[in-house]
Image (cartoon, rainbow, N blue to C red; front, top):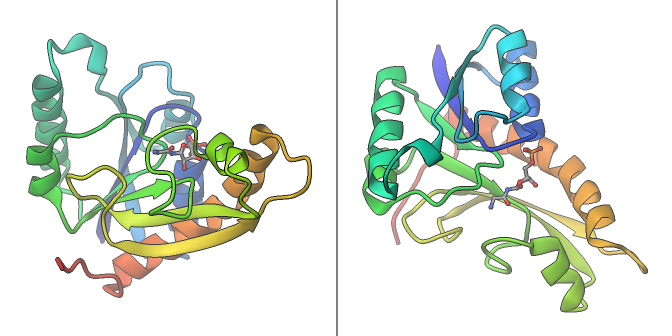
Length: 195
Ligand code: GAR
């Protein structure tokens, strides 16, 4: 069985979508663990309630980024995942860790990359006067939010949208997009190639 580990930092609604798709058989894989870098990440409760190993790797307890990355890499190695899904994981990972898992680590980002890497994507799209926004699932590479795109979805920006309204509209599409992208990965239809 294909083994998936999901990394989260908070709410975990994208992780929930992945777990439900694996449980229903839509994705032919099992989520073997959910790892959060914050002990209070709400998604951990959902994971545990679904019989999934819910693990905390609290970045504040490590002296520096490198030590956190090493701890996380050790956890991941032990879990031996075929796929690692960053689903609302708000923490930059170092190049060494990324290289160790490159080609089997994917991320969901709330913008039409290459537009708006980083944070506050919804406000930035509104401030720029865009009429379309969206979300992207891509392979993780050492450069932030810059890896090869697997799937994208466009979402219209409506007159008078606030950042929160836009975020909610995008999030509904993110859930479907992440399931679609991971399904492709698991089926071997989204292989990583370096340019
Ligand atoms: C999602 O919108 C996700 O795309 C975003 O955080 C949110 C997490 O929601 N991720 C990033 O901004 C990563 N750069 P969730 O915890 O409910 O899935």
